[in-house]
Image 1: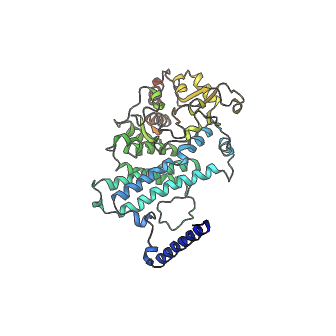
Image 2 (image 1 turned 90 degrees about the vertical axis):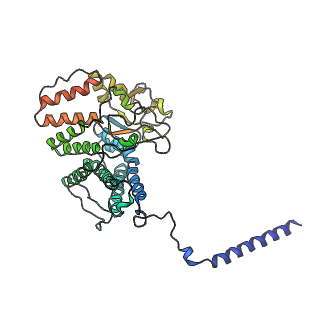
Image 3 (image 1 turned 135 degrees about the vertical axis):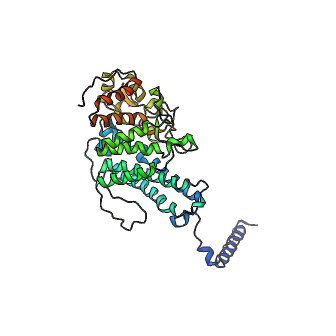
Amino acid sequence: MTSNEKRMTQNKLIAFIALILLINASSCKKDFLNKLPQSSLTTANFYKNANDAETGLNGAYDALQQEYYIWDYQTNGDTRADNCYAGGDNPTNFQIDNFQVTTVNGNIQRDWQQLFNGIMRANAVLDNVPNIADDAFTDPNRKNQILAEAKFLRAFHYFHLVTSWGGLPLTLSLNDADIYKVRSTADEIYAQIEKDLLESEAILPETFADDGQTRGRATKGGAEALLAKVYAQEGKYQECLDYCNKVLGNSIYSLLPDYTQLFDGNHNNNSEAIFELQYNSSGEGDWGIQLMTPPSLTGDSWIKFNTPTHDLINTFRAEGDSIRLHASVIIEPANPPAQYLSEPNSVPFIGKWKHPNGWNSPDDVMMIRLADIILLKAEALNNLGQTDDAIPLINQIRSRVNLPNTTATTQD
């Protein structure tokens, strides 16, 4: 057979196949073509059973893996507090550092969107899980626990929003017809946060059966600790004190004797952790750590963000606070040196996470821990005029890192 004959045969075969496909397509039933893809899940066809409720709650927790919690909240907090320089090469970070944020700051936009995305996910659970029949849950308490966890998460996101923005749109349901809501006042936001947390506290367990993950889930102690922080922000120091005492009276929490173990990556979900963001190296790693930890750990030459300030380092040294300094900061030559012109051979980098693991760090991040609440109790006591009772709490934290007792004796 000649080459021309081969091409003619191939063309006839292709034409024949195309004809068969056309005939088959024309004979398909219309309802087959109109079937809804199985992947098109909505709140109308999804929340039908207990497994759907758990999956929806997992989706709400997954909002804690967004860029705000992995990255931005640390930059926004530490740079504004002058614990760190913004670092890096992102002008939007410099705006935050210098309190000169413009209306087109991309960091601020994504923070707002991601925190409200977290609220949306929690609201999806709160809207739909109540409609699932109680007998769909093998554990009669589980349905209410799911709702309580979702309320904690909604309160947690709103707490991060209100402390940065003040008044906010208050959105408590996906079914709210008013999609362009005006801002509620900060007081109204705090009132809703209190309501969510008080309702959560009444239902949440102290621990879950899978205790290894308890510190990463909403618990009674987590709700009480967050309430203590909320009351402090509002200046309600008696309520803050009451809730600090609830947390400190819970036997499942205790200070780690060795401060350095908090940040060595080998003691995730330890006894001091109250609420901890969970990461692993199997697809849910923390990529933000790669951008902050030093070149000796990351093996790259990226310009690092959140570099500790001279004032912070000098304060550690002036206090003789070497344990916390060396557990929290790594000082080493820059790579490349030109990125840090002032002191290229002794640049401080964040050292609280030791395993960046190539953008996939398994090191958890503690959002609330016991030492935080002990110091918060001291603050509440001092503001209530009970300074003598506050001083031993300060000394408890100082003594763990071999610092002498505070010399402070007055409320000021």
